[in-house]
Image 1 (tube, rainbow, N blue to C red):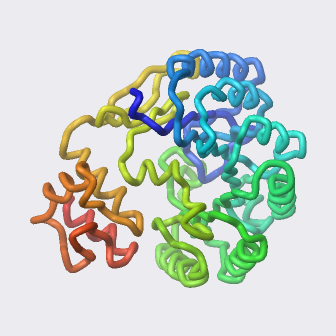
Image 2 (cartoon, rainbow, N blue to C red; image 1 turned 180 degrees about the vertical axis):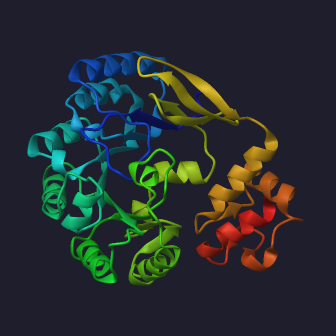
Length: 345
């Protein structure tokens, strides 16, 4: 247990449900939310003596409730002076008072869900913030918490144009945003748009992906969907996932990876348990390969787990799509990853 240096905490509550999302999240009354945080804080006591290198509070919408401050207070014993402590935030809930509380509890990284800088698209897909809210939230965090802000965007909306993407990239550059994620819109099984038979435009998605890659050339493109201003601002927590480091998942709906076993926290809001997803070598090697090749660093052949993974697959990999040397194995192009993995499947 002492070897695990990463902690993910899931806060499964939202004030409303966006139409494209199917993460584990609920709209609940304050009493239920308070009980959940009571239970969560009780469960976290098991790890009170561990100092984590990264802690990530995701959801849901962690910053939509004041209960989040009790949780932050409870994990102060888990941080050291170099811990990366990230919290996901929706722009409409950000205030000066909230930013100051985050600062008090040593939050040093913000993941802000901008999604798209177009108010009509935001409204159509049931986001309750505006472009103005995004700008305001960034100013507040810059002044009162941290300048280490990551902006999350989604492309692939049928209404999205290159003109809007240009607006987003100009905003990123002019505000010196430290980290940016661009995720492709996906049809999740339980999302509202999937139930309403939404049709993705695959050609549009591919064109927008290529356009974003071109326009973000001034940034460090270190993972398929992620860019940082420079190496310093790469997400240490997410790099833990991509490098197959072990992490503790806690909170209903969280995932975790410990002792080479991948699990999900299932059950109910106030009574959950770990449910094993897989714990065999074949799944472990596939997960390790898939995650490592998502990054520009690839498989590190000096890493025991990465070397074992490569040895398992080396006769099956399409080497024409890879850059291979004595130190690592990388994709020649991120866009080739699906082809590499499909060949193995």
